[in-house]
Length: 194
Image (tube, rainbow, N blue to C red; front, side, top):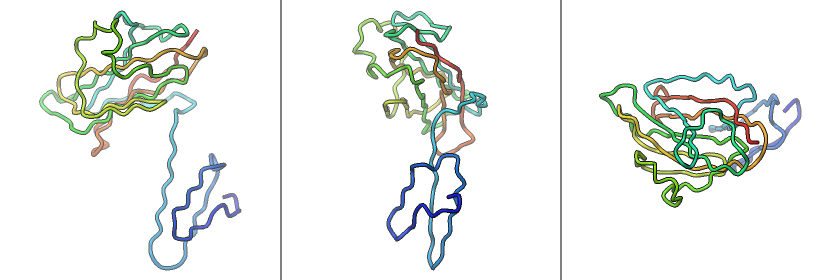
């Protein structure tokens, strides 16, 4: 990296993760056999100019308060409980798209409260929640694995506004896991917690 050796492969996995952001890295291999490498990076871009598009799939994100009233301003009070609705639909009404991952990365000021919405009595107004094949909940994101159809499916989860500030919010994404042409990215912006 920048003319200095930062690692040497000796037959076991070599992982380099510190101090390599925004650096030029050269790889050199010699000898017989094959050597494989990969680079992984994730996060939300600083300039929220992400292209928002629908390609065979359509996904949207809507915020509600705990009583079912839509929140349109994307401004919340600290300690507010917010219901997030993710809607997924295949744009071809006669087709279904299997193995779709619907992922929503949270803005830094929000935390997932409880992925089981049935545990919160005030949320009895939710009558159209769809089933999913698998749910993956992490500190910074939630991912529903499902099949998209021509009829809209709705997935709900609950977050709490925990930290005051203005935070970048990435788009909700829907990707067919085995065909990158089938995707939808929508709803990037900012969230304010007061």
